[in-house]
Length: 433
Image 1 (tube, rainbow, N blue to C red):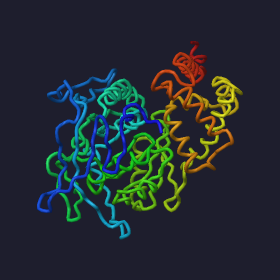
Image 2: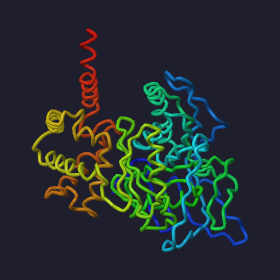
Image 3: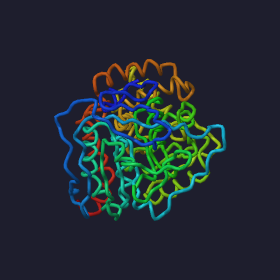
């Protein structure tokens, strides 16, 4: 299964995530020692040194400056995590208590993964003055995310009439989770909310579509964050019910799917329970999303829907589009032109897949073929997936993130200009432009 570049080196093992940039392991401490998150020396050498302190980056055309912590320049670290088995999954799940309204303006939203979707999710949550932390093991990914947010946050806030929040990026998990030093724990070993640590109230996982990767990272976050912190997965094809069953998650009552549909252009978010999500989590998070400007669509709490709502419909369109292209029936421009004309849509399926990333499209297609073959599958689905991987993913043609994809970068720029003209042509004609 292909992963995005910043996570390509990661290898999943029984003890955690082992890769060129990060190692997550479980360590059992003596019973007399307070469990804590510790940090050892980097496992990779680097000639760079960490920055000395906070740095101010002015957003272009900003209403007021946006603040970023410096991207940590050292490239690797090792985090040793204390072992905590958590409550018996078969026992009655503990009651989840929402964080106070007052704390939401102080405690950040944590976005794990600085890729194409993660940085967009962070942008929208920061657009109403909320603090946001972006965590990634790749300094390059964080640098790219910082540039994206610097270029777009001020304009988005101007459009909405809001002020940007404090956004920081880090490769240090303890900084990201607000658990530097010795966090307080309750009798069950859970980290308790502490007004002085400013730990996140919500953690959103935006990693590649790999069940072992997502499960391992969510388990790490579960042990590192306060008991009132909501754990959300942005997966487009994997359910949190699968993640909870995979283990070693101990608190599925605060876990759920939040599937963002390429913000900030799209404001829809699909919410779905893990099957054990506390009844208070879904309405609380949906209310917070509406404040930010999202439109949540909540799958009924007692229903598990593979593909949620949109992807069950999108899967059939996507697979048949790939089949048509792989068989040479039509070119991407022809497919999208037909789609735009008939549905009066701004963009067609090929341009949409380039936005998502063709490596992500391939990963989702592989997962669907293996776990849910009836979801829009056709006789040529496997051949179409093989064609996509051989002609695009293997060649590094991933869409917007790499430049070329089903459309070249030049073709996409021309389409973007066309979309803009079609959107505002009535205004221009009225004004005599």
